[in-house]
Amino acid sequence: MIKKVLMMSSVALLLLLAGCQKNEKPETTTSSSEATSSVSTVTSESKENEVTLSYKGSISTVEKDSIQVDEVSGDKDADVFKSDGVTLIITEDVLKKSNLEMKDLEKGKKIEFILPENAAMTKSLPPQVTPLEIKILDN
Image 1 (cartoon, one colour):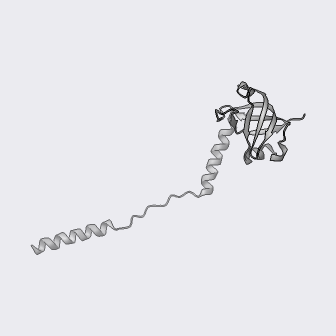
Image 2: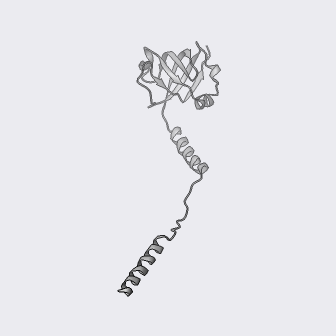
Image 3: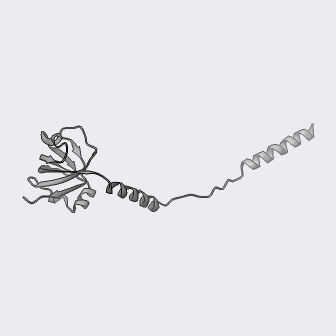
């Protein structure tokens, strides 16, 4: 009987020690700069092939991070903007790409704005959308 107890205890101890053994897996980490670089590359490539639409209008209201544009005409579906105009959400990226500052966007100025063909837009009145780029037109 004592032999059986010692044998079972030995087996249990071996199993316990084997279960506590540290499993070392090779690390497969990616630095944040490598991840950002690959995301940027994918984003850049997809934007190069992106179809864009051009619209023109007149700035009627300027807010902290948006402008209201009325009298909109343009490439496709400009009638969506006809009755109430459109609110353009102005981000730092938009200003940087457009080589503009928020103070350049003044009430009454004529602008051209570029949207992706399938731009995400709110169903509010007026619709809200973030343009890819804004150009101030000569009056």
